[in-house]
Structure formats: C-alpha cells, structure tokens
Length: 133
Image (cartoon, rainbow, N blue to C red; front, side):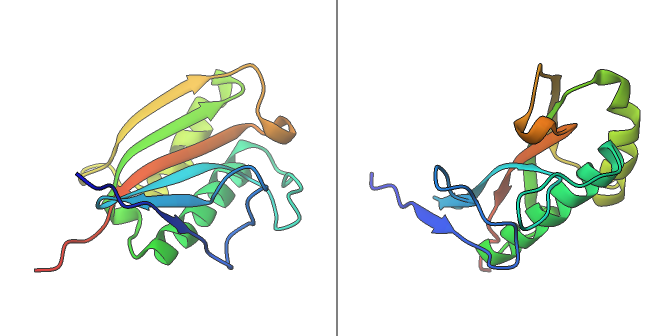
C-alpha cells in the first residue's frame, strides 16, 4: 500500500519554525502541528490562556482551510496546558469553536511542565478531509 504525504502550508497562518510543517495531509487526514497563541513574528500574545487559546484555534482554522477542510471535520484534539488552574478558562474559549451537543472531537488535555515561549496552552489536532460524493 502506498502512502501519500503532502505538506500543508497556509500563508495566512503563523509561519512554522524550520523544524516542522504547519500540517501534513495523508490518506484522507490532516495532522496539524501544535499551535500556541503567538503572533506572526512568533511572539507570545499577552492576555493569558483565553487569548492564547483563541489565537491557537484561529491559526488552526487557517491551516485546515489551506488543507481543504475545517474545524467541523476535526476528529481528535490534544491540548497541553502549563497550569491546570486554567482548565476552565481554556474550555470556555474551546466551546466557542467546538459547540457542546454537536459531534465534538475526541480530546486529550494534559498539564505539562513548560511550553514554547512559556505559553499557557498548545493545541494540535487531526481532521478528516471531506469525501467527494
């Protein structure tokens, strides 16, 4: 079985560092790299976990669009937070993007010791590509 693998790049999203791609599309899925709440110059946004969560999810939306899919097709999300005391605040913003009562993605959320740029949150996901009828 041959596996296809294509780099996904969105010029509208924050640029990736040289060591990874924004996302990889393979066999009907898009694997989006971890996103933190930073600006295009890779400087961490001020304002805490709510601002960072929103910025990370907005960046993910741009990458998914470049891949030909959207948040509606996300099937798995991994969230890394630096302080579990911020869990509720992060969830409130997350719920704006993935509405409870819908087919929200499977999710894992863990606390980690430190994130890049000392961010409060990092989010990565896997999405399905739409299937042509």
